[in-house]
Amino acid sequence: QVQLVESGGGLVQPGGSLRLSCAASGSIFSSSGMKWYRQPPGKQRELVARITNGGSTNYADSVKGRFTISRDNTKNTVYLQMNSLKSEDTAVYYCNAYRTEWGVVKYDYWGQGTQVTVSS
Image 1 (cartoon, helix red, strand yellow):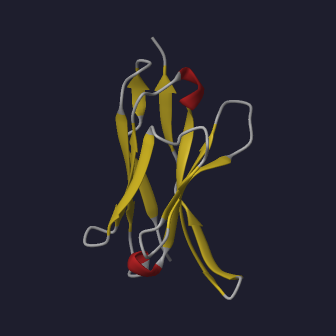
Image 2: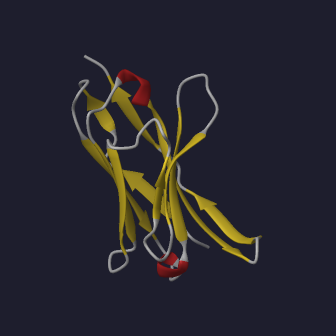
C-alpha cells in the first residue's frame, strides 16, 4: 500500500507564493506519474498539473506560467511551486500517484489533501 502525505498549504495573500510537497511511501514512486488536483469550495475536483515518471509536465490553462510541478525521486517527493496566487486558487489540493500500462490503470493513489487559502 502506498501512502501520500501532502504538506505546505496555508493562508497566503494574493500575489504570494506557496510550495506544496507530497511525500510518498513505498517503492513505486520513481515509476509513477504524479498529479496535483484541487477542489475549490462547492466545485468539482480539477487537474492542476501532471509530471510523468520521465519528467514531462502538463498544466491546466488557469495555472500555466504561475505553477511549477517537479519531483525528486531520491526523496520520493513531488512538489508544486505556486506563484502569483489568486483568490480563485483557493482550494484543497490533492496529490495523486498513478501508473497506466497500455491504457490500463495499474494503480491510482490519493493523499488526504492540504488546504490553500488565498485571501487578504
